[in-house]
Length: 209
Image (tube, rainbow, N blue to C red; front, side, top):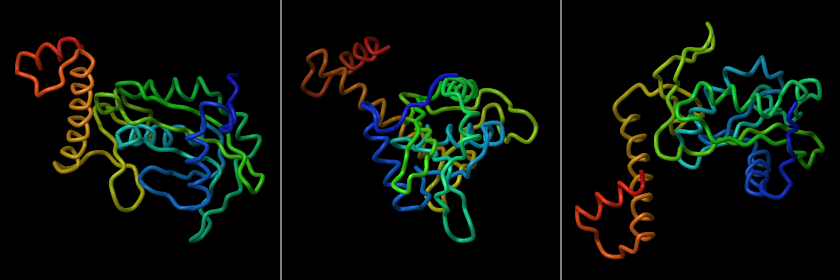
């Protein structure tokens, strides 16, 4: 099995800070999802669906396993050792990305919090150029369907499929912003500092392909 690194190692500083911040606050949000301790097979389909939605969110998000909802409070009890042993970093990433087109950018890590409890974290990056689409149906009960786009809308933290024009527009605007940033970076790289002509824009787009 592929080992799961601790979040306090070099290269994981931002993730470590995000996790501590989320646990300190003990509150879910668009970019933070809590799940109680459970084996991979028990959480797999919910994690995959949430991960695709996080990938379609500006700046992505994190899923923290080991935080259980008890009444109106969150119990930071951590992930049980027997449950943690069912997660293999490569398998989680491979299986999750097998449902997403394009594949998700993900990191998996463990965090030991200040209460000395350990948590499993999945960090999902914002999409690079194109929003993530579910590319195949999951098994019955998985709530994964080919062709659907999953999002984390403002308001109550939840994962849902795109179901109206405004939600689609928000996602397309994020994609357009990313495309514009890529084009500007290309213009600077090839030495265009003033407003490009239509021909220059065309050449830049060709070079960026």
